[in-house]
Image 1 (cartoon, helix red, strand yellow):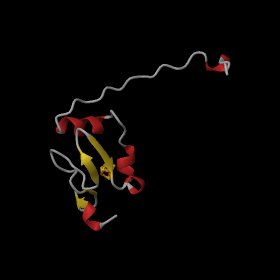
Image 2: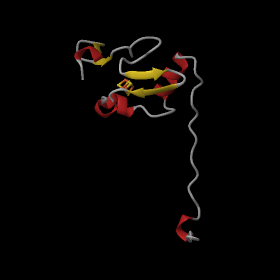
Image 3: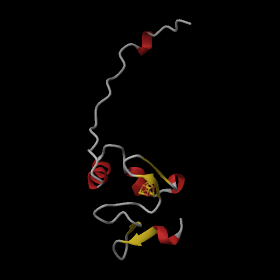
Length: 89
Ligand code: SF4
């Protein structure tokens, strides 16, 4: 990862450049927020990036900071008949 991709938060901790501000925008984020974005270093992203999941508190905090509605987590129902499923074709 290029050195300028991180910025210090404390003497010990650092974060991705651009993420430690009221309207965060990571230096590695590609695309247009609110339309289509992706991580430009997805395979090499940090462990803290890997912890963020869609619709969790961190995800929704960033969405709200960019005037987007937060996601709502829903529980997917367990399938009830997969064990007895017979393939027709
Ligand atoms: S997942 Fe990628 S774009 Fe998102 S904060 Fe981490 S490095 Fe930046």
